[in-house]
Image (cartoon, rainbow, N blue to C red; front, side, top):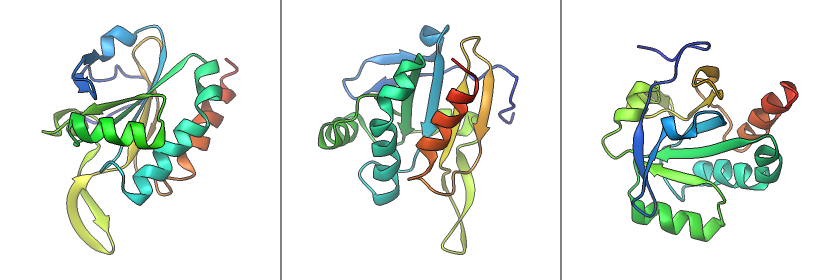
Length: 157
């Protein structure tokens, strides 16, 4: 079932870098920005993560929570978070089940070839648990966090 704006976001529970389970339902009442990325400490993923880090104060002021999800394990997330001083939570989805529910895993074009993998995308889930915005395929990782912040600002929170 594809992600649809205005519909309930698929529920999930994943582990963070410390092995603690984080459930979407526990964040009810907050705006949640869930961004899906292919791999820790790679050029595009680092630019995107650092973009969210650099805009963190403005995002956080609006009461939003940021969750980054990749297939990387807890140790990788811990190292990535420490290296770049990321102030938000990274979650591990090694079997890509949550990514699949969110249309963030599947067929994509990479360097002109069809391949199967993580599709860089973001979902903004409102306080009511419904999808407010779905960025299906993020073309420029470095610019994307600014676009997310602009959307948050546009709602006048």
